[in-house]
Length: 219
Length: 249
Ligand SMILES: Nc1ncnc2c1ncn2[C@@H]1O[C@H](COP(=O)(O)OP(=O)(O)OP(=O)(O)O)[C@@H](O)[C@H]1O
Ligand SMILES: [Mg+2]
Image (cartoon, rainbow over all chains, first blue to last red; front, side):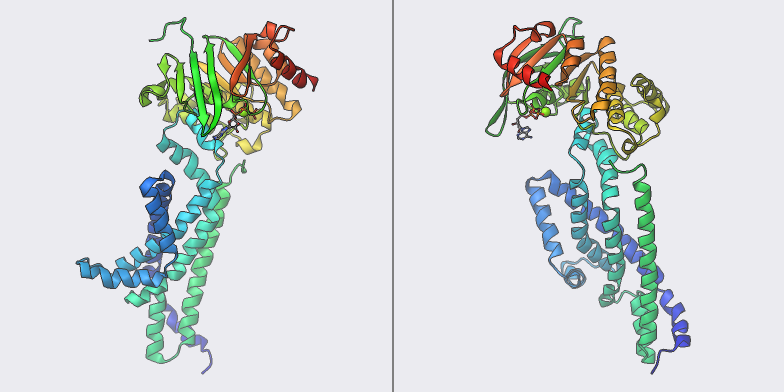
């Protein structure tokens, strides 16, 4: 049973038909993970009880397999009367799981900002909020563009985990073809190539963004 | 309201500790409107901490620090309003690297003083002219020399129209050939009547513009004298010794 290019080509439309699901899950999860991760990091910086809880949550999340989060949200939440669609659960699981990692990325990005920066902002009487928005966040962004992009690619590559929740993503479609035709090589290669193309696209986008953020050179 | 003759800064019995370290020990200092005070002293003597207290960057534990008629540290809103009357220039410039020179100067004008973009840019350009660097308005800090960056930092601090300017060793991170361009700007500022407190070891500058020189050591003010007397033979032995060491090179 060799690799049949014609059959591979015939798989493309079926698998591509799920690209929307994959991209939607990945995009919303990236957004969710970044938002939750940023809030975690802000809470950790404020310190006190919220800071300790947040620090613990970040470590806890990073030390558990993503599948446990997905299964937990999918099978345990309904026990408490919370019924969510499998795609919603999938997005929640990926967002939570990656928020722990992104909190660490934000931490490194903020730690790399010299402390003279917030001091200068204070000396100019900027409010805390304006300091975060106009001084800290933009400098954090230029520090973290590269690692952030890597995690976005990771999130994209993690979307097939949602197969365990029967979310019809691209890998799911590939398996559908495989189980109907008993041919695995072609659909898997096609799905793999599409993921590769998407990952390259994200990396390229991040590189361009990084170059724009670094306009005018660093310090 | 503040009467014209009231001092801008009035410090009495100021004490500050960092943990067990007694960094400011019973400081008394008055800065009248229009006065130019130079603060000098060996490393670790508390000079930076003192001027950082004056604009609220550091808090203090004992004593009274009145700025523009307000005792700092009592009521948050009034403290913030008083601190808005200060401008600060740091040793390491601390310009915002992601903003252009103009962006650095207009940020507080727009966000704190509530100016529109074009109002803010007009004000900023006027101050950039004053520090003689208007042609760099669209450049980023990373594209400027140290001396240019420090002049931009001075313009940025002036934009909010402060009543007192605080300088913390503004020239000590600069290459020797750039020190003069920054000092020239500061001298011009002094001639314009700006109230200034300046931590510096540039004794030529002190001689030229200071009304009063304050010598600190170990968190205390050991000696304070009109600039004329400070540089004559009459000063405190400890400050004479210090002067000799810094004037030797
Ligand atoms: N945030 C801080 N926490 C703990 N100790 C500090 C802090 N800032 C300064 N100190 C200490 O307080 C003392 C006075 O520091 P300060 O920076 O005011 O001295 P300085 O006179 O400005 O010295 P230099 O000439 O080196 O700038 C020093 O011993 C310093 O180590
Ligand atoms: Mg200092």
